Length: 103
Image (tube, rainbow, N blue to C red; front, side, top):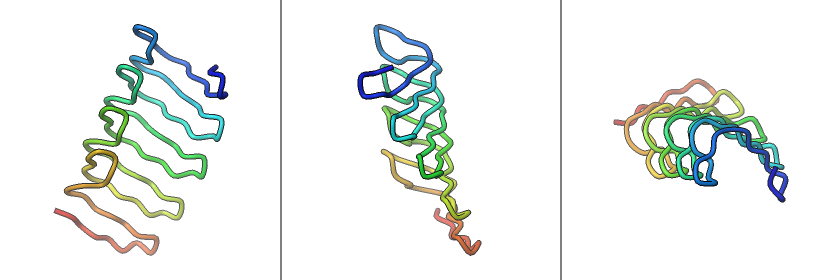
């Protein structure tokens, strides 16, 4: 446990999170997946304390690659992410089921 209350269970390398792990923050946010050099890298799932969730690829601690964000009311974006933001091909599904395709 860190001084701020964050809990990490998983693999380490050179005193940094590296490999598979689970991190739970004091506010209830959590990340489970792969780490490299202390940051999410590869594939993992981030769940916000309000119930939103991102499942997919990470690079240097940011959503990057293919992934799906699930909102609170059934909305989602499935597609490409770059530097933490939806960017590129994908589909956004709204609360009412309306679908928007990005290419």
